[in-house]
Image (tube, rainbow, N blue to C red; front, side, top):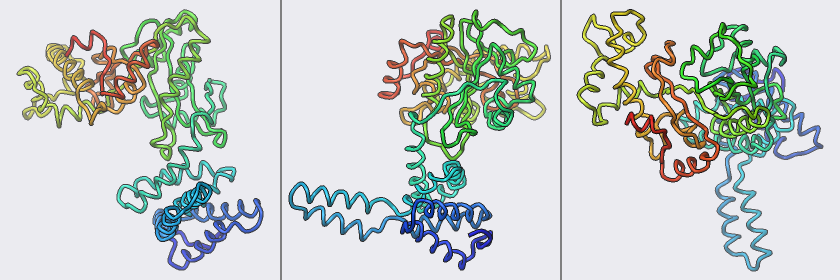
Length: 434
């Protein structure tokens, strides 16, 4: 099908696609023929521009969904079944009718060398369109269902990434890092040093593409400041003498796998691996961003029964003309602003504690990072002032970061409490802030 379809997939080319899809679904010929036909469809998709790709996906969504009449007929045959054997046959037939033809088509890409990555990337393009089109949303659910089964945790490989890992893969770490941008090769080398670890999940059909990775610092005591943790000039400590593992960055790498859960398994696997290799490690904690705090502070905090002092502080979000705003005061290194910063610290820490523990979406923590760690069984250990004074850190969380503690004997209990009733495990220090 090379060079047969135009990039915007005009109507005439859609008919050509229908013939190719029919040939794939009919399954004529052997396994090699089926792979060749699926490869042709994949090549056709890749030459399309965004408009053409959307038309391709709309074709799958509308013309290759379940046949409602066939489903109703299968239901009636099942209702009319007599005896267990006939009922089982009718049930199997109903299952077949409920599977859209497009699912059988998409499954054929699994047989291609780059087919799994192709579908992951296809879903990444599909998801924004699915939010505005119910038919494409149904197609997205079909693709997600396939990917969720193919990327079951049992199929994934955990690998440690080091400075000796091939450069092509190291470049992808730089590209995919989503929490604390890797500024240079020297920065990356520092993050892969003797007192640092990086672990990633890989799928056997995508061996050169990390799915998710976590960066870990081996230190003494719980880290409270990301700038110190990432300082390239800081002395390297002996990892055998460290007592704490700090998980300071977790990055999902494949947009098309959104909704497929890897992170909770990744942290637990890494904790298990580090515990086995380094029995000197006694504490496992994160140093995490608080991505939704400033947004909550600007839009919802006034509904949270604030004190007079906290209300005055919120006025700094919209200061009078010529006056510094909240973030400018926190960022400033000028001695004249020291009193202002100290005045802000107490109320902001209290509000942040309230946000992390009480701001909810249903039973879940409103903050997505908090939800992730609380659902994994961690507890909120401490909130750290001036922990990330980068532009991103200031605009997300007024420069604060939080430690989530993974205390191994309590993980399951904390997970059950949060999953069951939305209970938030927290230290006495955080409870005192509240």
